[in-house]
Image 1 (cartoon, one colour):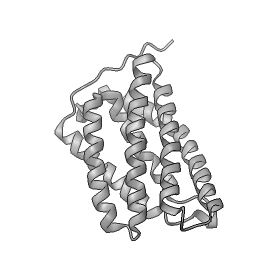
Image 2 (image 1 turned 120 degrees about the horizontal axis):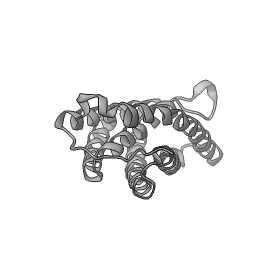
Image 3 (image 1 turned 45 degrees about the horizontal axis):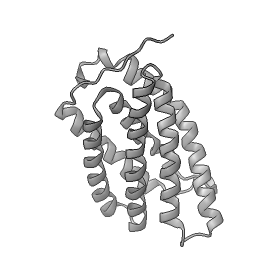
Length: 193
């Protein structure tokens, strides 16, 4: 039986701004890549990069208070919206991304902390379940706002379905990364303190 018990630390300004910056880069790059399909399939390149934003928030949620993580999300949301509006060629994608991002990332943090409270030693459960639920909501909202009246509904639904399947596989692959960063090595790295 794993006796791991999460301990929350105070987030430094360095970690806050570094995380916001990484978050904005992930979202902006994903917003650019979502317009391109992988080998003419219903999977976009954005499905490969966007899951990193959930991994990043879950790592923060493991070590910092909900208040600090939500503050980081709000700043990340604001700056990601600004950069997406100016960098992404289609404003509909930026708008859809921010709405989906707003709903899903806050849901991810909420579910993560609820599971953390109920099952403190089951780190893999909170990481896997919170991200799976939030990514489903995110992907559904995004594709329906971004492409509903642009593409036939069959294509919109298939984009949602296949992107979510890819994100789910990446989510499973992220669980060991979450463990290595948030559980195993966190206390050994001074940078995060």
